Length: 294
Length: 276
Image 1 (cartoon, each protein chain N blue to C red):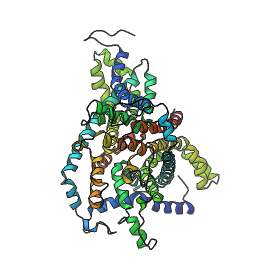
Image 2: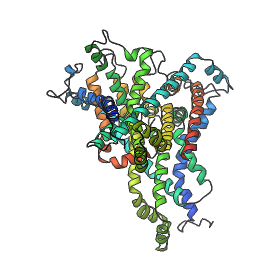
Image 3: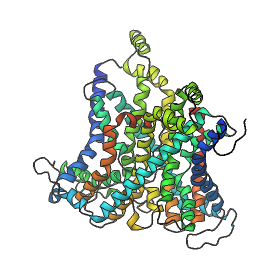
Image 4: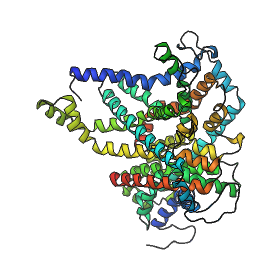
């Protein structure tokens, strides 16, 4: 490696490379690496937002969190949310991708309009679904009543049984286009000859799908599911705006729980503990992702 | 792709209708409610015939919403510009240079999108308080840049990988310095990739709720998404007509970008975007 010369003369090539990476490195260290390590550290303290002083408390936060029934509920809620909000948009996104992959006129346009559901802000999406499922005037209540299925309105967002359902439906609506876009790419990558050959051998549509299309899309499906699970483990907007984690904690998933501990109860130490447990779960899925992506 | 048997046709028809309604009806309902006179908000009818812009007029006459919109535009433009530039530098560096730690940092950057954002926020919030940056957009913008970096760096690295090293060598022989090689020769060739990343960065910061809700505590500096949430949610009698109009307004910029730059948009999306 040639040495770096004085100002006004040229730098060695690798020095240029290092200089170019510095802004990214600085931002990465200050916004991601340091905050992450520091938050892990805070999970062993009793830090609050009100008081700059704090002490180390060992594993006391962890004992507290694991013996708290609301944490177990958060864990269960997150599990339910991640499971359904990944599975449903995946399945319907796949069917939608197959339907729109029949080259009929307007298919491209329908695909583009479908993507609008995904690109608009989570705040808009939450407002929209809050209105659709509104207890007093929501279109779902009105339609069910006019069809004679309901006699009195259901307070969908106000009762624990249905609130999570609405959150999952809204998230499914938001993410279906994303799965559709990825899976369309996967569908278009499948060799047409193979399908032709199978069909000549007398394979039915479902058989073609089961034995040729699905295996051909295996890597896309794995990546999309792992990314989808990571995205759902991270998700915040819809349960925050639609239900604020309620009623009575019924839609409190990890992100909401950390947010509330930190910014509503001001218990940074406890929030960091919940966050650390959450990060461990995420790390497991991310590990899967990097293994599969590599 | 599939044989058009009767079973396939029935299957397609049923799901086309069901998924079609699910995907398109809510969008229609948002626009419909926004365009109906406020008195008709709770009627199940379509706006045709008595469409009105009165709900939009109310939204645009609200001084706080206009301010939030300006703030959002400011933050999103700066962060998408900064994110693109930093990603260009990093992508170029990863692609064409060799130095100690390059590979390690490359894979670490990729993992950055899987760090739980809420846990980073705890420390970022405390850092801002300590540095008395509560009222500034600094932390917000840097966070958006950080979350655009993984996708941005990797997408642009792929662009620079396609450019032959000979391009740099011959420019050097011609006596061009590094700034000239980077800004006048190489970056123009990566512009399609840069546009994808700029869009990705803009949409990320425009749509974000978690960071903008927590890192901006000063009401006059709030951005649009948290501004609307704080303005409308938790009201006892929600003003749905105005809320739907506001939802259309906050969605409009990203939808317009999408409509005009679809090709770049999809490129950014399939680059491995995880949307929280």
